[in-house]
Amino acid sequence: MVRSSALRFWVQCVAVSAALFSSENVLAQKSLKEAYKDFFPIGVAVAPRNLSGPESDLIKKQFNSITPENAMKMGPIHPEQNRYNWKDADAIVAFGQQNGIKVRGHTLCWHNQTPKWFFTDSLGKQVSREELLARLKQHITDVMTRYKGKIYAWDVVNEAVPDTSNSIYRASKFYQIIGPDYIEKAFEYAHAVDPEAKLFYNDYNTESVAKREKIYQLVKKLKDKNVPIHGVGLQAHWSIYEPTQAELEKSITQFASLGLAVQITELDVSVYPKEHERREKKTNDTSTFTAEMEQKQSAHYKMLFDTFRKYKGTVTGVTFWNVSDKSTWLDNFPVPNRKDYPLLFDQNYQPKKAFDGVVNF
Ligand code: GLA
Image 1 (tube, rainbow, N blue to C red):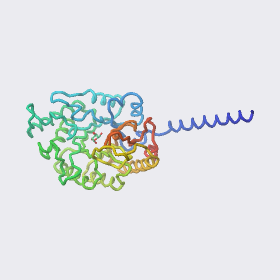
Image 2: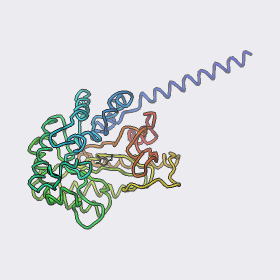
Image 3: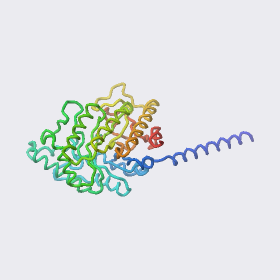
Image 4: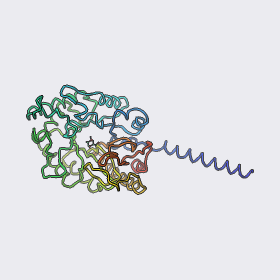
């Protein structure tokens, strides 16, 4: 009897100290923004629904930069020629201001999620080069003026380079109607509105040899013409299988050789091999986060952040695309209804194994 109550007491003591130890551990754990305060801001893409409740607490604790995931894209913010929808973008900028969090703007000119009206007149006919340039200028001027001084960096042109084909320009409506100089015009319009804002060209698949080279040619032409561009955004929609450290270093150094900053603008590390085109779910597409995936993802995140730190001064920002594994755009892309686990926080907003290797160095 005496022995068993002593044993019970001992077991309780062990349990209590284990709990204390682990909660102290959580408290003692550095946040992302503290760990990187001498390197670069750590950002996250947000929607208005993330700005209250547990996600908002997580954002305030871990991040010191935010990017509107969708709210500033051409379609959502400018659905009709004479109507802007400022509500969501205003809420995100106000959240940043209230909490001392920087805001990155995304994005002023993109071939995707552009409203139809942009390219057609009232009779449904395609607009002229002059008209499209005038609309682009108006759009950039209105959006940037509203947030002038509150947004420190903008993705001015997004994804203007194709993955395949030999051309360095994607055959978008902007390209077809205006010609390749729509890109430099967009940067010039943006710089005229806010000369303080850092202006970026942003794209994905930037570690593919062919695409990196095309992006390099594109931004080099801009630099040679003294177009006001300050950096290249590597979207960084990567996976546990790519890129290699050498591929990543090549992208960073090649763009930096033009005197440009590099920002990691949309980071996620999918646990599946990377695919850039939408496709249907197949029978062997499972949605389990295996121990092997967890291991690979931790090693990959560690390598990525080791590399970002190595290029301190060139890499001037790192932004994650979504807050936690609870819900991310990769749950529905490229395969609808296949759950992905690409971020540093799990479905209960707790730091994953990969988090440790990112904050402890
Ligand atoms: C691209 C865009 C982002 C976003 C992602 C998917 O990377 O730049 O704005 O749409 O696709 O969420």
